[in-house]
Amino acid sequence: MLAALLLTLSCGDEDSGPSVRTDLGVVRGTAFSDHLEYQGIPYAAPPVGELRWHSPQPHAGWSGVRTATEPGGRCAQFASASGTPASDSEDCLYLNVTTPVGAQGERLPVMVWLHGGGFVEGSGAEYDPRRLSARGRVVVVTVNYRLGIFGNFAYPGLTGSGAYGLEDQQAALRWVRRNAAAFGGDPDNVTLFGQSAGGESVCAQLASPGARGLFQRAVIQSSMCTTKIPANALAPGLPTTSPWENPASAAARGESVATELYCAGPAAVACLRSHATADLMPLFGTFAGLSYGSPTLPDDPSRVLAEGGAQPIPVLSGTTRDETTYLQALDPSSASTMTAERYHGYLADAFAADADAVAHRYPMRASEPPSRTWASVTTDSAFACPTLERDRRFAAHVPTYSYEFADASVPPVLPEPGYPLGAYHSADAYYLFDMRHGAIGPELNAQQRRLSDLMIDYWTNFARTGNPNGERLPAWPATEPGATVLPALTTSGEGVQLIDFDREHQCSFWAEVAALR
Image 1: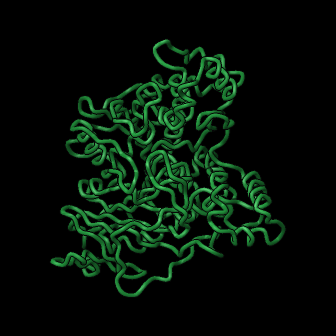
Image 2: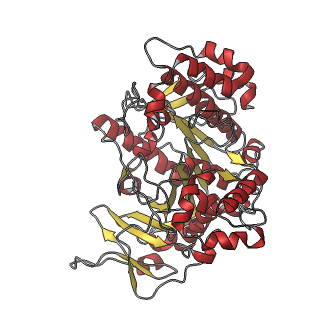
Image 3: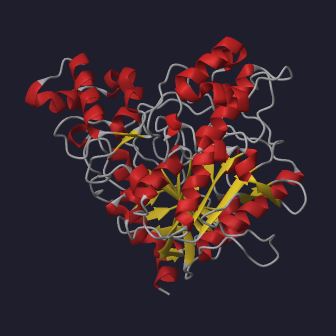
């Protein structure tokens, strides 16, 4: 009843729209036939000036009615290959809320989306959740969080080093807890979901003491968060590395950045804060990953999740069948010029003494370029098999539902690197969201729309109950601790097929490769 009183729908005036009173003030959004949308709502103070590299602080709020019909600024980043524009804004801690029509007075599940983009690009507003919200009758919140050097910077003795973006996500979750009811959502039924860097963020929040109680379900899509990433998998020249950097290494790089900008000694951080955003952008990507050792993320999440120390909540988790063809398409010149010699060199860099065994398992074929074979190697070793192992461990403690997104016909959003991309990295997100504000998404045909509807039903059922199954849906079996067979989401048949995931991706073999353990 209180939520119904707080939300009033205006009509007849094209300059008015639905309004909601949040704890910071009233916001006025936009009404559509089946959903309501509120964009650009601040959830924390702008992290500028002295608040650069500082925990997110409370926003001062506003008087009157704040127009919430356009997104807030994108966090500072370069233009991306996926079509999104560059931004030089550090005033970017905004979120967006989409609700189905008639949500007022209800207690609907809330789904909070953390975007991907390698911690260096993306925004919440580029993901349009109207179908997810209206079809699934859920409240969807999409979030901006600080990126690159602004989100992940570390320096010796600097409070919160390496975790400012993760702190932003927690501040957004606390905003949701305070305000969900005003939008018709249930603050005690929140699902945190994300893809790629967003999925890794979900892993981090599952391991973070400060996030406990802020969400009750977790969805992890295409995340490398529990095993080493093979050399050259993400880009040529990158060494084998952990997805989580140790604090000493991150802080040492911060000192190097400070030196490069002529900032040193006790006043180094103050000196860095005095630099304009543009001064820091040439060094933006030097902090493209997450580190632990802060109060927000005190321990290595790989260890926390492996040892069963994550929040004990239901998990939905999966990958796409052809994850890293997308990474090859991001660097088409390298993909098109890869030779047999370079392929074997990559294997040696990544797998050392096991390189010959990998070459035997993944021989080059005359029918496809070497870069396609390398994509198979990295899909299986970096994404598919680590996800299966992680899900098996989750399943020993909590209800777990695994999947493979397997629509190989999904239209590509990047030029193909000499071969079809198949079910590439990020493709599953396009079946949950439409894209906007410069981001490119595929045009789905009728069969793909049916799969999209099925996935929306599964994801929102999971948000509602912790179980994706529902009336008139193909059965989705829970994952067992020793699972080898998993559901594949596809446009054929009923939309769900059980596959021998372990055999398809050679996971028993990868479990024995020493370089990844």
